[in-house]
Image (tube, rainbow, N blue to C red; front, side):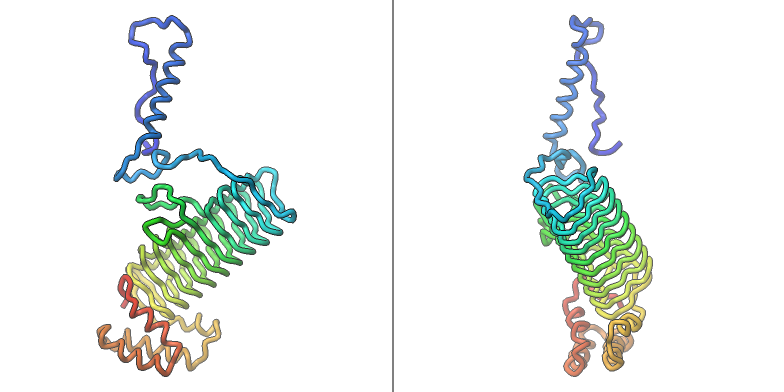
Length: 329
């Protein structure tokens, strides 16, 4: 039985063996009992019990405000738009989509059927949300109690079927941020307080836990997952089904369960216009850190020396010095 359901049966309060004078008395008593159960549900806080259902959140809140809709926007008659929603020029909202709360949809954004977008959420221009995506919903953190947190999404992102992106928490940044030109494939998940850069690709079922930071041009293979508070640096490649319990530096390929480093992402770097000289310098940095069997304290002075003459190495060095959850080796 789900935790937001009551196991107490709703019965008449008439004592056994006593005839009701009014034939509607039983129904009235049942209604009163039901009201009592609902009151008990509404007043329950269940602190520390990990409840995230209707015992904590108001499932039927009053949505205040009037939508502001640009005259060029196209909205299907069956779509629901309510609250302080701002719809920009040339936005398309298709059948049975739900947009509610403090939501902004930038120019040219397309919302396919049965998408749910809740606020506070600010979405930029030319994003495309495919059917059954859930955007800006309350997060799954058990400490979250409905505080007014936010979600920001940049421009030109694609969210395929069943994607979910949650707002932040007051224990974290208070917001979740997604950059621009990203592709989120089917059933990908971005949890609360994540920061995602630009030009990233998340393959089917890739999962980001809470408080994760992803740099630009990162690729996640299918079913890959990263631990909360994890980091992945720019231009890194995370193989399919990889499990990241530590951080992946920029330019590095990670694979395995738990993931380890498997060289640099040379193919990706070449595609993005890195020169042979730059790729060679990145290879040298990788060798110093991963192949020379040096400790972090021994490797960092050598990396600093290399970065002084090869600026492309500096992001690699800075990432390692930050040392969040530790670096995969």
